[in-house]
Image 1 (cartoon, rainbow over the protein chains, first blue to last red):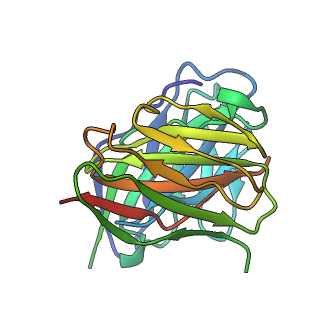
Image 2: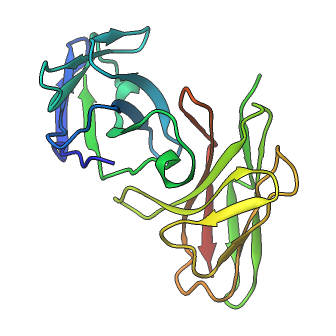
Amino acid sequence: DAKTTQPTSMDCAEGRAANLPCNHSTISGNEYVYWYRQIHSQGPQYIIHGLKNNETNEMASLIITEDRKSSTLILPHATLRDTAVYYCIVRVQRGGGSQGNLIFGKGTKLSVKP
Amino acid sequence: DGGITQSPKYLFRKEGQNVTLSCEQNLNHDAMYWYRQDPGQGLRLIYYSQIVNDFQKGDIAEGYSVSREKKESFPLTVTSAQKNPTAFYLCASKSNYGYTFGSGTRLTVV
């Protein structure tokens, strides 16, 4: 699976949009971009994933560049409860064995401030 | 509600003792995973199972053992051979759509 690079930490004001970048310059054509977040002392929570097109759901939007070498997760109106570590992961969507394993880096610690 | 249940949430163990962490899912997922997380670090894979009665070592399997006798259950045993077992342990299951994680077990060796 391709390696990702994320900033170690970011701050965001409550009510503003939080834009979390991720670089994945070695991504392969069949690899998806996944985002998870982990609130302190809890299990990671799925947020969104995409292949080429931009995606939006009730939690966030995912913007993938045309060359697919980077992406941005957007939380449109950040709240204090969005304070968490956000992980960007790229992997094939299907597949057994080691292809099925998510590789979590250290992620970005997002702090939403009042 | 469907999900993954890990128990207990907190666990204390004396040095030299084996301890088993429970993981149960009612999502009907075939694949299940155990991860370890240390403070300020990402998740590292211990063991995974693609199907009942089959499991494979992950990146840090030494000192751990698992079983997969039922689709719903994937218990992890931390043995006395694990030299640094104090950590946060996460269980997950996977569908083609994505992963679902449990709420974790925090193991402390005293």
